[in-house]
Length: 227
Image (cartoon, rainbow, N blue to C red; front, top):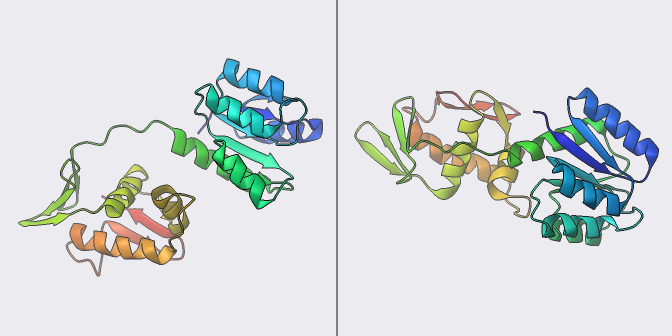
């Protein structure tokens, strides 16, 4: 996945390092060395994602995040800062940030977080009203699974898990990613919650839930949907 990324960071070495890494990953990079320039470039360049330091000259990072959202810009904001207090994190999220990474940071993890934010922000095609998975047919309008002569109601979390697995069909989706995508960063369920809903989902989709053909377990990794 590619995109245009705005880096708002006053330390030249950090900006240079980020640019080098991100361009090597295929991203286009725009830079700003202070908050005022960062907000102006966010409005002018319409980046796909903003990497934002908090301790920058001019407008600080909190003011930049507030200004980006006040202008109706919806690009994900990833705060990258040395400030690690819980108060700063909460305020950052309240002002519209989507992720918060503290310095020093792991480059590979940062790139993975950027890709995850861009995936979540990407427009999603409209799901068809009815979708076949093996012998089962999912009626999205009625939230019902029909398998042979049987009909099963599809509950909210089961439906959201299934939508995620369908979007990533053939890929392994980790339990933690399912938690984040379906329940959200502010919720506190456990991976056992995911397993419980997947178990119920299998009873509705699979011919034999004990030996699933379609919602498969990738042991130690997560789940994979195979049509």
